Each structure stands twice: as structure tokens, then as C-alpha cells.
Image (cartoon, rainbow, N blue to C red; front, side):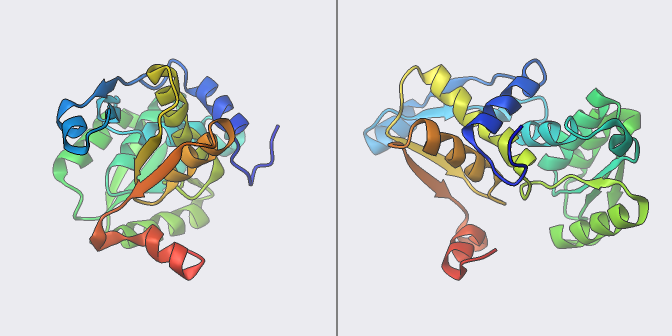
Length: 227
């Protein structure tokens, strides 16, 4: 066992064991267009080909599968704009856990229907407010009121460890260690997981996080010294 407050290469490798046979080992494909644009070999990890259309299933499943039976019986809740909710829904159905997913009104109907389809009878989709913050406040209140477990989209070591399995797969599929790994950033869970594994196993790799100019939360957090 490892410190529950620490994400290490070992905890990420243990997560990979839990995810074997659950998540898709998505292709790693060369991109001729991007390679020509930057005059380097560029490979793309196709996590959009996961069952839930993103890497989010990795963290959600790794979190929920580690809950003991008594805790899981009380149910789980989450807040999401769409992708994390799909991962939670799939994990709930696979593990036989019941969950409630809170999404803002801005979440497209197609995503809401996909969440419901993935979770089946195990998932209830609740639309609340207009922002992710609205959905998160409602999910947090639900957890406090019912005893259900809140499944964080990024801010938990179990979620982060699950997302970090992407890096391990990339290196295995590539067959060599790349110079640079470029990681998209939303909440920071994927970046934290990928960075944790690479820093221990391949510390010479340069890691570049990329986030939208209009939602540069990690850049702001680094400047402020806290979230």
C-alpha cells in the first residue's frame, strides 16, 4: 500500500492493473499534418476512441473500484460538464454501483443522453444551474446529505493515478522515450498523473501543459501558488 495522499509511478502502475480489460488500449497514431507543421515526429494518443469518448473513464473507474462494499452501497455522486460523468456512469454500471450525476444546463442533450445510456439503471442524471460550479455545489450537498461518495473529476489521488496510466501506455506503444509530451489541461488531473509517472520513470522528458487562454486555471494557480 502507498500513502493515499501521494501519486507515485507505483500507484499509477497499480491503477493500470485495475483498468486492464476495462478501458480500451487506444491507438497511438502518427500525425503527418502536425509533424510537417513543427518539423518533428508527432504522435497522437487517441483517447477519443475510448468507450466514453475520453480518458476520463480511467480516473473514475480507478476511484470507484477502490471503495469498499459498504461505502459503494451508499452510492456515488459527481459533477461534470459531460466527459467525467460518462466515465462515472460507465464505472457504476460495470461495478453495480448506483450514482447521481449533476450536470449544468449548458451540457448538450447528446451528452446527457449518452451518460444515461452508459449508466443504465444505475445512473440518475440531474440537470442543475448553468455552470460547472452550480453542478459541483449540488453534488457536494447531495454527498453530505445522503452519505454518497463524491467522485472528483481531478482533485483526488485515485483519479489522478487513473489518468496517469495514459503516459505508461504511450511509452509502451511508442517503443522509445520521446523528447516532449504535450498534455491538454482542464482541471489538471491528466497533467498531474502524466507528470507524476514521467518524472519518476523518464525524468528527461519535457512536459508541456496546454490550456485555453480563456480558461487558464493552472497558469493562474501556478502564479498564485495555490488553486
